[in-house]
Image (cartoon, rainbow over the protein chains, first blue to last red):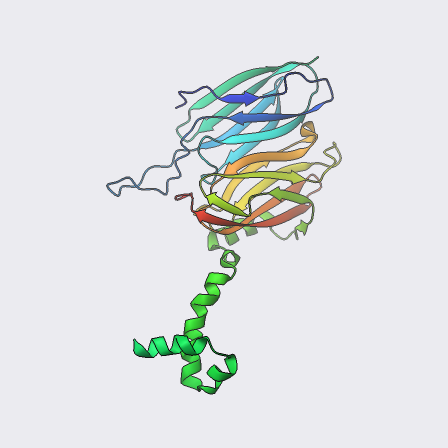
Length: 108
Length: 167
Protein backbone atom coordinates (compact mmCIF):
# COMPACT_ATOMS: atom_id res chain seq x y z
CA UNK A 1 0.00 0.00 0.00
CA UNK A 2 2.67 2.48 0.95
CA UNK A 3 5.21 3.03 -1.75
CA UNK A 4 6.53 6.07 0.06
CA UNK A 5 8.19 5.91 3.44
CA UNK A 6 6.15 7.50 6.25
CA UNK A 7 7.44 10.85 7.40
CA UNK A 8 8.18 11.46 11.07
CA UNK A 9 9.24 14.74 12.59
CA UNK A 10 10.82 14.85 16.02
CA UNK A 11 12.90 17.57 17.63
CA UNK A 12 16.60 17.17 16.79
CA UNK A 13 17.28 16.43 20.41
CA UNK A 14 15.37 16.42 23.68
CA UNK A 15 16.09 16.17 27.39
CA UNK A 16 14.39 13.82 29.81
CA UNK A 17 11.23 15.54 31.05
CA UNK A 18 10.82 17.73 27.97
CA UNK A 19 7.42 17.77 26.30
CA UNK A 20 7.94 17.17 22.60
CA UNK A 21 5.65 17.29 19.59
CA UNK A 22 5.61 14.17 17.44
CA UNK A 23 4.46 14.70 13.86
CA UNK A 24 3.60 11.78 11.61
CA UNK A 25 2.45 11.49 8.02
CA UNK A 26 1.79 8.39 5.98
CA UNK A 27 0.87 8.06 2.32
CA UNK A 28 -2.59 6.55 1.91
CA UNK A 29 -5.55 7.21 -0.38
CA UNK A 30 -8.09 7.10 2.49
CA UNK A 31 -10.82 6.04 0.06
CA UNK A 32 -14.10 6.89 1.78
CA UNK A 33 -16.35 4.24 0.28
CA UNK A 34 -18.85 6.94 -0.71
CA UNK A 35 -17.42 7.66 -4.14
CA UNK A 36 -18.23 6.09 -7.48
CA UNK A 37 -15.90 5.42 -10.40
CA UNK A 38 -16.59 6.85 -13.86
CA UNK A 39 -18.90 3.91 -14.69
CA UNK A 40 -20.99 4.57 -11.61
CA UNK A 41 -19.74 1.59 -9.59
CA UNK A 42 -19.07 2.29 -5.94
CA UNK A 43 -15.40 2.39 -4.96
CA UNK A 44 -14.79 0.20 -1.90
CA UNK A 45 -13.74 1.86 1.33
CA UNK A 46 -10.04 1.63 2.04
CA UNK A 47 -8.78 3.75 4.89
CA UNK A 48 -6.21 3.61 7.64
CA UNK A 49 -8.44 2.80 10.59
CA UNK A 50 -5.86 2.60 13.36
CA UNK A 51 -2.66 4.43 14.26
CA UNK A 52 -0.57 3.32 17.24
CA UNK A 53 2.55 4.99 18.60
CA UNK A 54 4.71 3.22 21.15
CA UNK A 55 7.87 4.50 22.79
CA UNK A 56 10.17 1.95 24.41
CA UNK A 57 7.43 -0.71 24.21
CA UNK A 58 4.89 1.50 25.98
CA UNK A 59 1.88 2.72 24.03
CA UNK A 60 1.90 6.52 24.18
CA UNK A 61 -0.80 7.40 21.66
CA UNK A 62 -3.48 5.70 19.62
CA UNK A 63 -6.03 6.96 17.11
CA UNK A 64 -9.03 5.33 15.50
CA UNK A 65 -9.66 7.01 12.19
CA UNK A 66 -12.79 7.22 10.06
CA UNK A 67 -13.27 8.21 6.42
CA UNK A 68 -13.51 11.84 7.53
CA UNK A 69 -9.73 12.05 7.91
CA UNK A 70 -7.98 13.48 4.85
CA UNK A 71 -5.91 11.42 2.45
CA UNK A 72 -2.29 10.91 3.52
CA UNK A 73 -3.24 11.19 7.19
CA UNK A 74 -1.22 13.63 9.24
CA UNK A 75 -1.37 13.15 13.00
CA UNK A 76 0.59 14.93 15.66
CA UNK A 77 0.59 14.46 19.42
CA UNK A 78 2.63 15.48 22.46
CA UNK A 79 4.78 13.37 24.76
CA UNK A 80 6.88 13.92 27.84
CA UNK A 81 10.28 12.30 27.26
CA UNK A 82 10.66 9.51 29.84
CA UNK A 83 14.20 8.67 28.78
CA UNK A 84 16.08 7.52 25.72
CA UNK A 85 14.21 5.23 23.39
CA UNK A 86 12.81 4.43 19.99
CA UNK A 87 9.35 5.15 18.65
CA UNK A 88 7.43 2.51 16.78
CA UNK A 89 4.67 3.96 14.65
CA UNK A 90 2.13 1.59 13.12
CA UNK A 91 -0.66 2.33 10.63
CA UNK A 92 -3.24 -0.37 9.89
CA UNK A 93 -5.63 -0.10 6.94
CA UNK A 94 -8.91 -1.82 6.00
CA UNK A 95 -7.13 -4.49 3.97
CA UNK A 96 -5.09 -5.40 7.06
CA UNK A 97 -1.86 -3.94 5.73
CA UNK A 98 0.32 -2.73 8.56
CA UNK A 99 2.96 -0.11 7.89
CA UNK A 100 5.59 0.22 10.59
CA UNK A 101 8.21 2.91 11.03
CA UNK A 102 10.91 3.03 13.71
CA UNK A 103 12.45 6.34 14.76
CA UNK A 104 14.94 6.83 17.56
CA UNK A 105 14.64 9.94 19.70
CA UNK A 106 17.93 11.70 20.34
CA UNK A 107 17.90 12.19 24.13
CA UNK A 108 20.77 14.29 25.48
CA UNK B 1 -44.23 34.94 -14.69
CA UNK B 2 -45.26 38.57 -14.82
CA UNK B 3 -46.91 38.22 -11.41
CA UNK B 4 -43.72 36.89 -9.93
CA UNK B 5 -41.73 39.83 -11.20
CA UNK B 6 -44.21 42.24 -9.70
CA UNK B 7 -43.99 40.47 -6.32
CA UNK B 8 -40.24 40.79 -6.30
CA UNK B 9 -40.60 44.50 -6.80
CA UNK B 10 -43.09 44.73 -3.95
CA UNK B 11 -40.82 42.74 -1.66
CA UNK B 12 -38.27 45.49 -1.91
CA UNK B 13 -40.69 48.00 -0.50
CA UNK B 14 -41.37 48.46 3.17
CA UNK B 15 -43.01 45.71 5.15
CA UNK B 16 -46.07 47.84 5.78
CA UNK B 17 -46.74 48.15 2.08
CA UNK B 18 -46.50 44.41 1.56
CA UNK B 19 -48.62 43.68 4.62
CA UNK B 20 -51.30 45.94 3.24
CA UNK B 21 -51.25 43.90 0.04
CA UNK B 22 -53.40 41.30 1.75
CA UNK B 23 -53.27 37.69 2.85
CA UNK B 24 -52.66 36.04 -0.54
CA UNK B 25 -49.87 38.42 -1.28
CA UNK B 26 -48.16 37.96 2.06
CA UNK B 27 -48.10 34.18 1.75
CA UNK B 28 -46.57 34.58 -1.70
CA UNK B 29 -44.04 36.93 -0.17
CA UNK B 30 -43.22 34.44 2.54
CA UNK B 31 -42.43 31.89 -0.14
CA UNK B 32 -40.16 34.43 -1.79
CA UNK B 33 -38.46 35.38 1.45
CA UNK B 34 -37.75 31.85 2.66
CA UNK B 35 -34.95 31.01 0.22
CA UNK B 36 -33.47 34.42 0.87
CA UNK B 37 -33.28 33.67 4.59
CA UNK B 38 -31.63 30.30 3.90
CA UNK B 39 -28.94 32.03 1.86
CA UNK B 40 -28.01 34.41 4.59
CA UNK B 41 -28.62 32.20 7.56
CA UNK B 42 -27.09 29.37 9.51
CA UNK B 43 -27.02 26.45 7.10
CA UNK B 44 -24.77 24.62 9.53
CA UNK B 45 -27.39 24.51 12.29
CA UNK B 46 -28.82 21.28 10.92
CA UNK B 47 -27.40 18.01 12.20
CA UNK B 48 -27.77 14.65 10.54
CA UNK B 49 -29.65 11.82 12.23
CA UNK B 50 -26.39 9.88 12.01
CA UNK B 51 -24.67 12.55 14.06
CA UNK B 52 -27.48 12.60 16.64
CA UNK B 53 -27.26 8.82 17.06
CA UNK B 54 -23.46 8.84 17.33
CA UNK B 55 -23.52 11.74 19.78
CA UNK B 56 -26.14 10.08 21.98
CA UNK B 57 -24.11 6.86 22.02
CA UNK B 58 -21.06 8.82 23.06
CA UNK B 59 -22.41 11.03 25.84
CA UNK B 60 -25.18 8.80 27.20
CA UNK B 61 -26.75 10.54 30.17
CA UNK B 62 -23.73 12.73 30.99
CA UNK B 63 -24.05 16.46 30.39
CA UNK B 64 -20.84 17.65 28.65
CA UNK B 65 -19.44 20.98 29.87
CA UNK B 66 -18.17 23.71 27.57
CA UNK B 67 -15.01 25.76 27.91
CA UNK B 68 -12.28 23.16 28.42
CA UNK B 69 -11.50 22.48 24.77
CA UNK B 70 -9.87 24.80 22.25
CA UNK B 71 -10.39 23.85 18.62
CA UNK B 72 -8.40 25.63 15.93
CA UNK B 73 -10.20 25.28 12.63
CA UNK B 74 -10.40 27.71 9.73
CA UNK B 75 -13.55 29.83 9.70
CA UNK B 76 -13.76 29.23 5.97
CA UNK B 77 -12.31 26.09 4.41
CA UNK B 78 -11.72 26.53 0.69
CA UNK B 79 -11.01 22.84 0.22
CA UNK B 80 -13.24 20.51 2.22
CA UNK B 81 -10.92 17.59 1.45
CA UNK B 82 -8.22 19.07 3.55
CA UNK B 83 -9.16 21.03 6.65
CA UNK B 84 -6.35 21.38 9.22
CA UNK B 85 -7.34 21.26 12.87
CA UNK B 86 -5.70 21.46 16.27
CA UNK B 87 -7.50 20.29 19.39
CA UNK B 88 -6.21 21.30 22.83
CA UNK B 89 -7.88 20.19 26.05
CA UNK B 90 -7.20 22.04 29.27
CA UNK B 91 -5.97 19.31 31.64
CA UNK B 92 -3.07 18.76 34.05
CA UNK B 93 -2.45 15.38 32.36
CA UNK B 94 -1.30 13.80 35.63
CA UNK B 95 -2.09 10.29 36.86
CA UNK B 96 -5.00 11.78 38.87
CA UNK B 97 -6.47 13.99 36.18
CA UNK B 98 -6.01 13.45 32.48
CA UNK B 99 -7.84 13.29 29.18
CA UNK B 100 -8.59 9.72 28.20
CA UNK B 101 -10.12 10.21 24.78
CA UNK B 102 -10.85 12.98 22.33
CA UNK B 103 -13.67 12.30 19.90
CA UNK B 104 -13.92 14.30 16.69
CA UNK B 105 -17.40 14.40 15.14
CA UNK B 106 -18.87 16.02 12.06
CA UNK B 107 -22.52 17.04 12.10
CA UNK B 108 -23.12 16.61 8.38
CA UNK B 109 -20.56 14.27 6.83
CA UNK B 110 -21.82 10.86 5.59
CA UNK B 111 -20.01 9.32 8.58
CA UNK B 112 -20.33 11.28 11.81
CA UNK B 113 -17.31 9.91 13.69
CA UNK B 114 -14.16 11.34 12.15
CA UNK B 115 -11.63 10.09 14.68
CA UNK B 116 -11.04 9.10 18.28
CA UNK B 117 -7.68 9.89 19.87
CA UNK B 118 -6.54 7.97 22.96
CA UNK B 119 -4.33 9.82 25.41
CA UNK B 120 -2.69 9.17 28.77
CA UNK B 121 -0.53 11.05 31.30
CA UNK B 122 2.46 10.08 29.09
CA UNK B 123 1.35 12.83 26.71
CA UNK B 124 1.80 15.61 29.31
CA UNK B 125 -0.12 18.00 27.04
CA UNK B 126 -3.52 17.09 25.60
CA UNK B 127 -3.04 18.46 22.11
CA UNK B 128 -3.54 16.67 18.81
CA UNK B 129 -3.44 17.82 15.22
CA UNK B 130 -4.80 16.31 12.06
CA UNK B 131 -6.52 17.17 8.80
CA UNK B 132 -10.17 16.38 8.20
CA UNK B 133 -12.69 16.21 5.40
CA UNK B 134 -15.87 18.28 5.45
CA UNK B 135 -18.50 17.52 2.82
CA UNK B 136 -20.19 20.91 3.29
CA UNK B 137 -20.60 23.82 5.70
CA UNK B 138 -21.29 22.39 9.12
CA UNK B 139 -20.44 22.27 12.81
CA UNK B 140 -17.49 20.24 14.02
CA UNK B 141 -18.07 18.81 17.49
CA UNK B 142 -15.22 17.72 19.76
CA UNK B 143 -16.00 15.69 22.90
CA UNK B 144 -13.27 14.94 25.45
CA UNK B 145 -13.54 12.14 27.99
CA UNK B 146 -11.75 12.91 31.25
CA UNK B 147 -10.20 10.32 33.56
CA UNK B 148 -12.93 10.97 36.14
CA UNK B 149 -15.66 10.24 33.60
CA UNK B 150 -16.62 13.87 33.00
CA UNK B 151 -17.17 15.06 29.43
CA UNK B 152 -16.18 18.33 27.79
CA UNK B 153 -17.53 19.63 24.50
CA UNK B 154 -16.69 22.28 21.92
CA UNK B 155 -18.60 23.16 18.76
CA UNK B 156 -17.00 25.01 15.86
CA UNK B 157 -18.66 26.07 12.64
CA UNK B 158 -16.67 25.77 9.42
CA UNK B 159 -17.92 27.25 6.17
CA UNK B 160 -16.86 25.04 3.29
CA UNK B 161 -16.39 26.48 -0.21
CA UNK B 162 -15.72 23.22 -2.08
CA UNK B 163 -16.91 20.11 -0.28
CA UNK B 164 -14.67 17.15 0.40
CA UNK B 165 -16.07 14.51 -1.93
CA UNK B 166 -18.00 11.88 -0.12
CA UNK B 167 -15.98 12.20 3.07
